[in-house]
Amino acid sequence: NLCLPFHFIPSTVIATTVNGRVNDLVFVTNGIPSDYVARASASTSLSSNSNVDEDGFSRDNDNILDPNVITTSVPHFGVLSVGGHIVSDPSCSPPTIIHGKHAHILSDILSRNGVRNEIVSTVSEVDAAAIRKLLWVS
Image 1: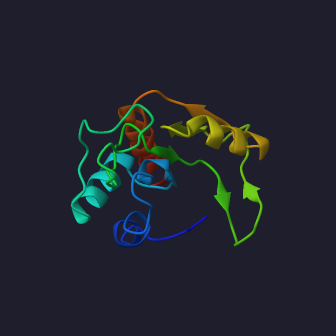
Image 2: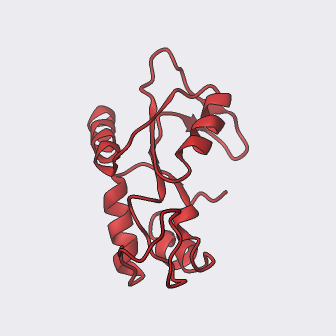
Image 3: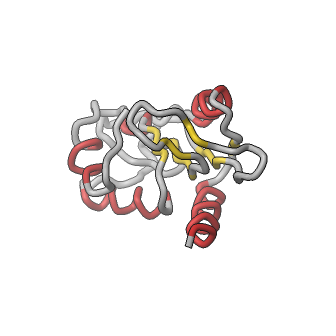
């Protein structure tokens, strides 16, 4: 588990991820997922292409960020300190929105910790939830 500012994602996280496994990364972050995926791809000269199999693995053994495969989420919970408990009120917090390859695993983890969540089928649904959250907190 890592907690890093965005500018470390291309240079540290993606660059050091084993070839062909970048689409196994799970992003629980504020911001607009398609935006940070695009910026990370541009920063690392990676691009989405059709040379990725149905499981999200690159056929060329390269690290290719595919926004339709990587797991992204819009969190509606907090962790106030390292190793702290999740802070969430399912009765009034919107659900955490999740999309991607490992959405069901992340959903199970969050559910076990009392976080309401919803798995969506498209990246645009995640982006819309992120924009709503940005408007909600401003």
